[in-house]
Amino acid sequence: MAFSDEEWVAIILSLKVAALAVTLSLPVGIAVAYLLSRRDFLGKTLLSGLVTLPLVLPPVVTGYLLLIAFGRKGVLGGVLESMGIVLSFRWTGAALAAAVMGFPLLVQAIRISMEAIDGRLEQAARTLGASPAWVFLTVTLPLCLPGIIAGVVIAFARSLGEFGATITFVSAIPGETQTLASAIHTALQDPDGEPQAFRLTLLSIALSMLAIFLSGYVSRFVAARLGARS
Image (cartoon, rainbow, N blue to C red; front, top):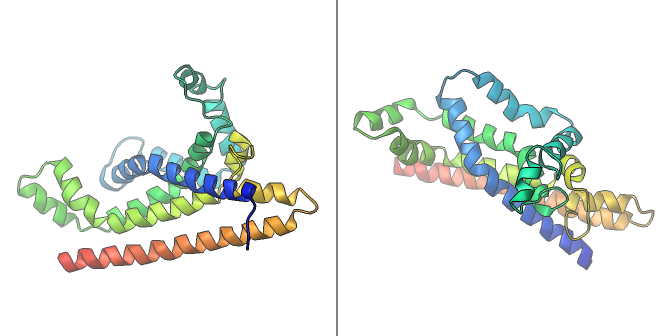
């Protein structure tokens, strides 16, 4: 199954967008998951709802909100543009859209993993004089590593398949913002583009299945290693 140069550009761009999306969202995702699983505070329900919102909103709505906020004339877009950072109709904007859409899945996987940790282990570390930050780095974070890995892989796969928010926010400019999903959509608009769409669809399915397999395998492997050390 041979791909054209234009298709390879879309494939490589999709991988780059997904990698940047996960890189940007991972630190925030860990912090939010920790707050939701370990802290009680005013507005916790609201924060949980905001995190979940991209899963229930139509992706086009999410893309439109991003355009309002980060477009050239947006609330934050104008400020960023004055700093030389332009997100709308750029591949970095596609990464932002993918990060927003994959963020709920990332947080959910990490939060579930953190909530499964035996709190007595963290309490024992605090009793021995460890600071909250040190407990988090040496106890909480290692124990929830399988969940972090699973969240990263799932968010990466979700970013690869992102379409609605991306095309609304950054369009589908060949070589700049046309990802794998938008390339499939573009091919389907061409009466002769069905073979191209079929090739890219098979690749998309293969990448998604690989991500699901790796997520389960790596998580089980890490969990087994952690169990062997404890």
